[in-house]
Image (cartoon, rainbow over all chains, first blue to last red; front, side, top):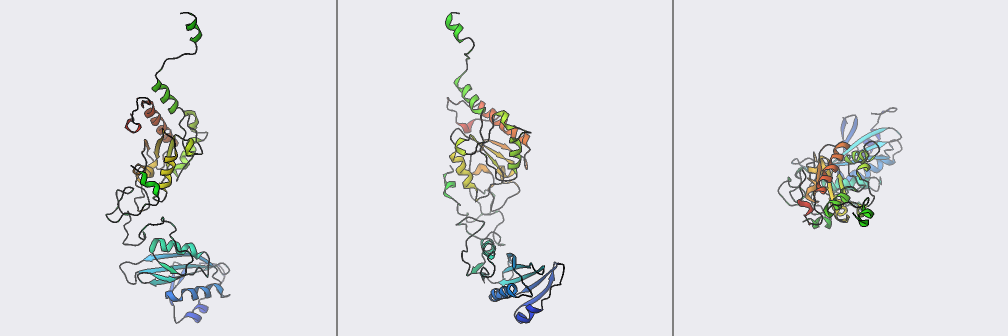
Length: 178
Length: 167
């Protein structure tokens, strides 16, 4: 996973040991499970603690475990440039999924969280500008959820889609089609 | 012949208006400089020195208002379809559309919520050029087919452009 000093999770367990679970090493990356209300404090500690210095947020992604409950999950991948360590934090979320935003910790979280909102409908409370990032304004539904049909809903532009509510048009220009 | 015949001997030819109009149209097909995905790379190659589309009078133009042909070269996403439609609407008539590649023809492998299942669903397509992506020769063949189509269009007789078949 890295060269140099091996990852030591003692500072994390010392501070948050009673609130987070150590899920062991998966695919060469240490994994923790944390409750969503702890995420901002945990992230700030991981970034600011000089022994850890996880100053780079690689990714935030969503997971839909449908029909399992709790249904959703937010996954954070962090990297420490100084120590060359990676860790992964997983938060299980209910339905509707709510979690505090970490944009105050890493500014790059802004677009990652917009992506998770766009695709999974995970609402990040405290996000400064939680708009869709891939799909157009006015699109309804969250396409990466397991109950969203992969082929989309049938309409003029998509004759092979599933029966259901058609997505709203991205722009008025397409309304001129004869 | 008298003096009038001598005066016009070397500079007069007889043709029909339809023939000369379609000849001029098909001999200067100016496509938009506009590519969406990997097909655009083949389109660029077709325009460069090795394949040299210029020799057919096909010269890429930087504005839809100066163009006769739109080559839809790539995957059209639903978010981008209105932009493609607007580019089409900005072209002066007569105008033609070439759907280049499997994605532009049918959505290709991207049978998903995000991709338009064929450019035919939002613009009238004259020529389909299959391939993934099509080689430059295939695009050249598409242009030759389009020229054949224009050749058979009777401009003055008012044959609707979309009713003219391709051989």
